[in-house]
Image (tube, rainbow, N blue to C red; front, side, top):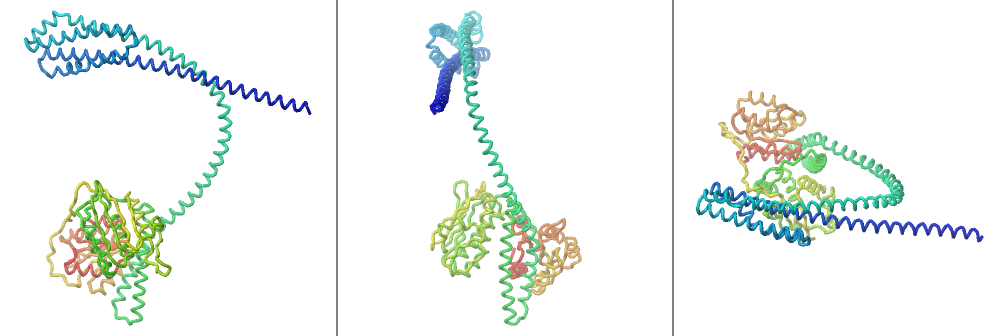
Length: 603
C-alpha cells in the first residue's frame, strides 16, 4: 500500500515538475520575445527617423533647385511667371531648414554641418536676389555678366556638397540601423519558431476536436440544404404553374363575364334574373381572387420587372380620382385627391397598382369621413400618402397586414371583406421597386400609408401622344361599327355576342392578318377597334392598332383586352385614344366606355 502511494506521489511530482518547467520555459520565451520586439521597435523608430532626415535634406535641395530654376527663367525671359518656382522655393526653404534642425538636434556632428550649410544657403540667396534686381533694373546683360563673374556656381556647389555630406552620414546611420534591425528580427524568428512548436501541439488537439464538430455541422447543413432545395423547388413549381395558368384561367372567366352580361340584357323572369345577378357576383369575386393570386405569382416568378422612367404624378392622381370617386360616393365618403406637379423616378404601371390597392383598401375599411391622397416634396424624395379616417389597425397587427389572406376583424360577427391580398401585392411590389413604405395607425381614428419615391430631376408635364388627322366620316351614333380581334375562338365568339346584343355591328378576326383583310374590305372604317393584346402572332394588339390606324390614316378609338394585369399598360401608354381593360373584363364598364367613344366623350 505504501509502495503504491509512493509511486502515485512520484508520478504526481514528475508531472507537477513538468508543468512548472513548461510554464517557466514559456514565460522565459515570452520575456525574451518581448525584449526582442522592443529592440526591433526601437531600431525601426531610429530607421524611420533617419528616413525623415533624408527626406528633409531632399526637400531643402529641391527648394534650392526651384529657386535656381526660377531665377534662370526670369533672367532669360524677363517674364514674372518664371519667378513662381523661385518664390515657391524661397517661401518653403526657411521652414524646411527649421524642420531639418529639429530632426538632427540630438546629433552634434550633423548640427555643425547644418550650421555651415545654412551660412552657404544664406550667401547663395543673397547672390540670387542681387541677380534678380540687376535683371529688373539694368537688364539681362547686366544680370548675365554678374552670373559669369560672380561666385554663384561655386557657392551652389558648396551648398549641395554640404547637403550631400549630411545625406551620406544619414545613409551610413541607416545602414547600421538596418543591420541591427535584421539581427533583432533573426533572434525574434528563432523565438517565434519555438513558440510555434509549443503552440502546434495545442493547436493540433484543438483541430482534431474542431474537425469532429465541423463534420457534424456539415452533415446538418447538408440535410438543411436538402430541405431548402425541396421547398424551393416546390415553391418554384407552384409559381411556374400559376404564372403559366394566367392566360388559361382568365380567358374562361372573361367569356363567362361577357356571356353573363349578355344574358342580363335579355327579358328574364324575376327568379332567372336573380340567378343571373348571383352568378355575376360570384364571377366578380372569382375574377378578383384570380387576378390577385396571379399577380402575386408573376411577381414571385420574376416575370414582372420594373421599367423606371420619370413619371408625372398629376396623371396618376387624376386617374385615381376618376376611378375611385364612384366607390367613395357609394359609401358617402369624401375622396380628397390633391393633384401635384411633382414627378418621380419609378415604374408608372407598378406604382399605379400599389396606390390603387392602398386607396381601395382605405375605402373598403372606412365607413365614415374621408380618404385622402397627396404628394409632397422632401429634399430629393417625393412622399406619397394615402390616409383614411377608418377603423384603424391594432399595433400588434401592423407587422402582419402585408401577409397573404390576413384580415383584421373588429368583432367576431364581422363578415369577411375581400381576400386579404391587396397589401400582400403592395408589399411585393414595393420590394421589387426598392420603395420604402411606412404605415401608422390608431384604432378608431384611421390609417396612413406612406411611400417614399425618388424624385425626378425636374417637374414634368404629361407627354402628349401623337395624333392622326380627324376621320372624314359621318357623325357616330351610339351603336357603332366594331372590329374585334382575338385569337381564341370561344373568347372571340363570347365578346362578339355581347357587343352585338349591346347593339353594335361587329366584324371579327382571329389574327392580325385577318384583321388587315377585314378592314381593307370594309367600305366604312370601324368606329372602334377591340383587340386582345397577346395574339400569338408577330404583332401584338397595340402594334396591330397602330398599323390599322396607319392603313386608314386616322386615329380610330381603340380598346385593348389583356390577361396580363401589370405589363401590358406601358406598351400601350404611347398610343392615343386607347384604353386597356384587364381580363376578366367588367362588361358594364366596357359597354359604357365604348358608348363614350362613340359619343366622342372618351379620348
